[in-house]
Image (cartoon, rainbow, N blue to C red):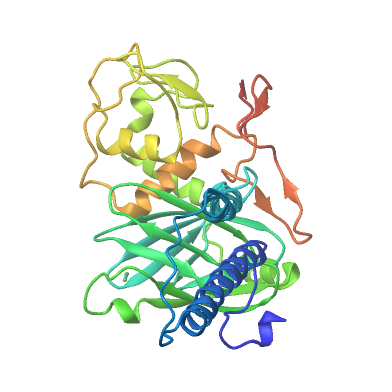
Length: 343
Ligand code: CUA
């Protein structure tokens, strides 16, 4: 119904209905409260108007009335809170087997690179009916990746990754906006999300491949000499990175954290900040030596040697089916493309 209502953007993702339902609920609640307030103002103005010879009656308060008008709004607010939290968590939790796309924002364009290697500028091709996770960073200032038809918006920050995800439900072309003022051409920092049927999408993918992103990452890994310390066969001077992604790691100062995209990124740019327990602070910083795109490729490569799937994430096929396993299969042995078995 809302698709024909011009005040609303199209609903084209699984999240859109949830966001709209909550929003409509808020509109109805606030509309009814406004109506109640105005009705009472008019009624009381008439009912208690000045009449010659009639003295005003003093009313000393009513506990029952005060408890009622406190308790009912409290309950309504708790419903809004709980409902909002549910939608928020749904929107903030990408499914583990989502297809991964890296986004680099800069003044004033969106650079997109798929895990399978396809590159795009100000465009993002995705298949319908598939979870897609965007791993985003900025080369300069804060931007915000906003797709109204999907009801998702997330700030894109320099110096770290932020993530958002969606599951497109309808083929079509949808607006992409930058939703954070980022300079003179901010309003021109727009693009298109192109949602295609799986077969069409597959054809597009095959026509645009430069080889998987993790493959470029492997090349950069070799070129920068990372492999001399980070051996993949034995424990070298640096930690063996096979199987590290998505796993808990212990730092030199005793802290535990999960080796996620941001941890890998930070460890490349500022290796001293969160050093793994048992390793010397000998790794040089790569700040300024690798571009955002190269960083993404390195992260995709390290992911790919941690997952059973050589694409470094779930792979998309024509049927839209998911192959490979998610990274949280603790304790299972995975076989890498080169035949190595990892835990
Ligand atoms: Cu980028 Cu506004």
